[in-house]
Image (tube, rainbow, N blue to C red; front, side):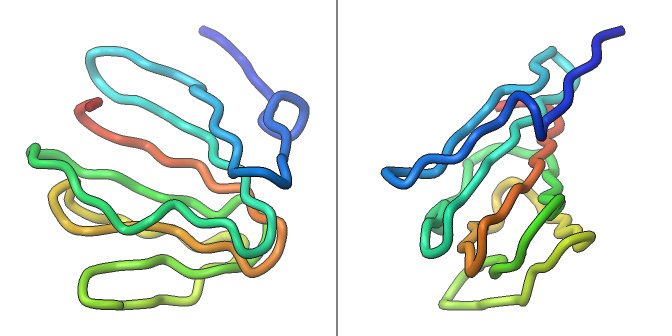
Length: 105
C-alpha cells in the first residue's frame, strides 16, 4: 500500500499545467494534472487499446473531444473514454484532475 495527498503533493504553475505521477504499474497509471485558468491539455489520442477516466477533483472547465466537442466539467464529474478516442481538458478556474489509464501507456 501507499498513500499520497494530492492537495499536499500537487502544485500549480502560472507557466504551464503541473503533472504529478501518482502511480505507475503494469496494470494502470494514475496522473494528477493541475491547471490554472486558461491552461489546457490539448486534444490528443493514443493508438492503443484500453480506457481512461478523467475525474475533476476541484474547479471547473471543459472536457475536450474530437471535432471541437466540448462538455462542461466541474468538481465531481468523471469522463470515461477509450484511449483511442480524442480527449483533452481546459480549465476555466483553478482545476485539479485525476487521470487513470488502464492498461498504462
